[in-house]
Image 1 (cartoon, rainbow, N blue to C red):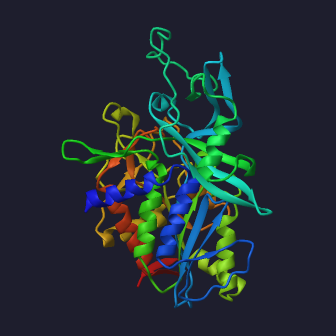
Image 2 (cartoon, rainbow, N blue to C red; image 1 turned 45 degrees about the horizontal axis):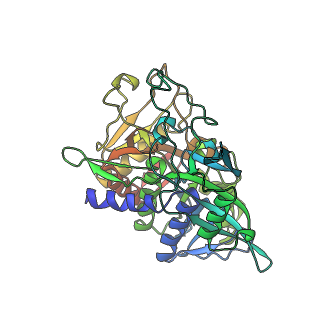
Length: 437
């Protein structure tokens, strides 16, 4: 079951070369399961027992399943993110070099490990805005073949490359697109062909590089899995499956996948936006609930902020905390931070441990070394707009932000089971205590 689940997860990852494709794949899965699409600019018709989803910018998505017993309403939310470090292609993309080469002009998106992008087949995907019949429409594009490569400079020309060389994104990391037979304009023509429209119909684009390398299951016991974008599409996939498999009739189950976590979440579609707040408020308005019930519901709610965690590195175990360190295939990670980079506290940790106990899933605890600055994630950022109990969790992995990351074969299954249990349980707050029904 572990291998099957892991391979299904990587099949999903392969379909998602950009955040736009990830949200499109999630939306299609929701629709296959009977979820109805809503549009932010239209009136929402919501009913008890109904299942719905809404997107923002085509790169963030929130789905929700409304229970039929709403006297004690609350929200159960699992949140992840759809984006990952890569290179965005600039609008005027083509750069000629000595009339022999044509490069693409790019800039870094998020904090990638630059060295992992060299000497591997890459392609281009994203979103274009097309003008047709008097309207502008978004279209997903994926060239879908080995298209460009970022060639390393030979060690003979860069003797210090193995001694801590600092890569320059404007010089060292521009991808090679074509030889002397290529001409400026070829790239835009190629993208229009991929979109199936005339070149003059393309009015705007958000295009990115992605790694074409196939996912791999490996290790002495086939215990590891490697693929691109495991941070955070592994959690996005697992929490979606748990959301679809779990159901309870008290309150509202919510699945959220936000864009732009890798660049701080401070966009109209990020976890720092009003997207979650707007959606939760509109659910209550659509159900005819008074405003007071919204605040009561939020106070009794719980969010799982699901974003992958750093496993102990076999070559550098000293980089992790002495006791609060985690390993692949050993269970879901609960993350804590004294400075609140992670939003977990005693209440949310206790709740999540009970959820995992009932799901039969192991848990681990992660904290940064006290002398090292760690990363942050979407839980504490989203709490600035919707303040509720939240726990930061994730799946352990190696090579986070590499073009090709590694995780454990068991862990996707663990996360699905825990999230399914989270969405299926009924627990409630009363007089400062929490009760499991």
